Length: 294
Ligand code: SF4
Image (tube, rainbow, N blue to C red; front, side, top):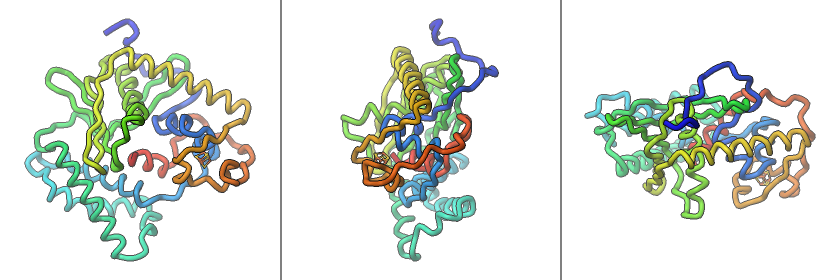
C-alpha cells in the first residue's frame, strides 16, 4: 500500500457534495441533463428497457441466495415471475408499461433471453460472491462524497478483488469503452480509498450481446479518476454558482425525457428551482434504474 492509498476513515467529514457514477456520467454527457435530474429532480418515466434491467438484476441477485448447484438457467427463469411481482408491488407504475398480456409476455421472454446470455458468460455454480448489491462510499478530504452500489464483489483466496457489474444493454464500441469503464474505476477508487486494496479486475458483463469488458486498474488509474472527479465537482459547483448548465446535444438526446425543457430541442429552459436539494439526497429511482441498462 502506498502512502496515497492509506484508507480514508469513515469519519464525520462535512459533506459538501455527492457524486455517484450515474450523476458524474450525466454531467459529462450533458450539464443540463444533470441539472434536470439532480437539481430540479424532474420525474423520469419508467421505461420497459430500464425496468427489464432492474428485473434481471433482481433475479441475478436472488440466484446467489440459492445453493450453488441450483444456479441454473432453468432456476433463474423461475425467479422471473416472483421478482416481477415484487417489482410491481414496490413500483406500481411499472405495470402500466404494457398494454396487454401479450406485450408483457414478450417482454418477460426478452428478460429470460438476457438471463440465458448471462449463463453463456460465466457459471454461477462455481462462484461464491463476497458481496452483492454492495453499497460503497467514501468522503474525500475536500468534502466530496463518492458513493454507489456495486452489483457484485468477488474475493479470491489470494485476496484479489474483482468488481462485477451487469448491464442489460449491448457492449460499447471501442471508442466508448473508456466511458463505460469510468463507472468501474469510480467503484475501484472508493474501494481502494476505504479498504486499501486496488481491485485486480473490473468486469462489465453485457448480457444484451453476451460480451465482457474487463480491465485491470493500477494506482495511477485510480488517482487519475480521483482528480477527474474532483475537477468535475468543481465544474458542477461553478455551474451552480452561475446557475448555468448548458445543454450538450448528442445522439443520447433521443432518450432524454426533458426535451420539452431543452433549448437545443426547441424547448424552453425551466427557471432555476427555488429549492436546491441537499447534496446527500438520493437520486430518483428511475435514474438509478436507467444506469443499470447501459
Ligand atoms: S435533449 Fe439532449 S441536450 Fe437537451 S437536456 Fe436532454 S440530453 Fe441535454
